[in-house]
Image: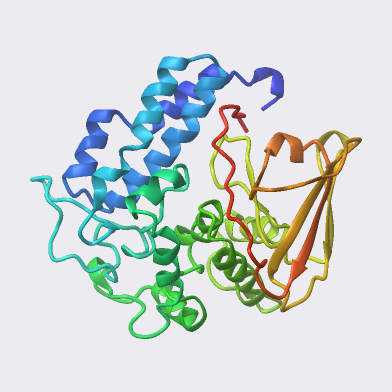
Amino acid sequence: MPESEFKPSSALQASANSTRTLQVRRLEETHGFPESVTRTQNYYIADAAIARAAKLLGKDSDHDVLMARSKRYGLLFNNETLFFQPKKESGDFYAPFDPLAWKNGFTESGGWQYRFYVPHDVDGLKELYKGNLCDRIEAMLTHTSGLAYHVGGYGSVIHEMMEAAAIQSDFGLYAHSNQPVHHVLWVARKAGCNELAEKYLRRATSKLYTLKGYAGDEDNGEMASWYILTALGIYALEGAKDEMLIGSPAVASATVQLPRGRVLHVTTENQGEGNVYVESVAWKPTGGQVRMLTSNELRYTELMGGGTLAFTMASSPKAGAQIHVAPDSTQDVFV
């Protein structure tokens, strides 16, 4: 579509309509619809992105409604099991709950794979886990023995289950072979679990993407896109937000051609197979001054202006490093 024919207000309305009415949403949240946890969590994420677009278009009332709706995920969180779970028509959680069982409330996975599926509100997710989010994510990644799944509602083994089991020895229940977990390591990064995120981001790029192929499905380019961004050491975790997370790059150096003739350079010092930890990151925007990044985040709009992102790598986590996550910005961008 030519840029002149694009109408942001019409696109906003169409997007909002696609996320269903609150009445239907409440039924899905509380009446155990098929794959209800996956469906409703997807809607929450969409609500947050659409809310940011509404804010930019000056539709503050729509923003407030949608953003509040995006934070209803707590309704599906069981404070006893510490998992998101489907509910019965009565509004009670199904019991007993088996987080290894696939299908029962979830799409192509189980409770473990959707345990941290709140990429649009990591601060809220940290509150649900009472400050232990990093430990919970580590427990997922280190669950390297025992069964990787139960067939659950599927009734028989599907290929995604076999792919998940094939990488369990290196990644626990982090089933990167399918899309439902692709946010997890970047949620860890956003939450400040720096050592954990850097270690496993690099393990994923080195072991799950090889000359033999990918460790799973390539759905509409998503699997490759995850790799390209992660290998560059950058990632957009939240939709329609002026933010890129900074990770642990797998490349020695790279040049990315951006729109309007702009260029992004990624460089590394001390890069190597064993040097997976980030010692420091410097950012020099085109025509600007170098500055050291003190958080795990950089504005998307600034990155798209071009410049050089320079990483210094190390073989061990930065000694005495303070975990600092930049405060949430009110300046969002519709992308």
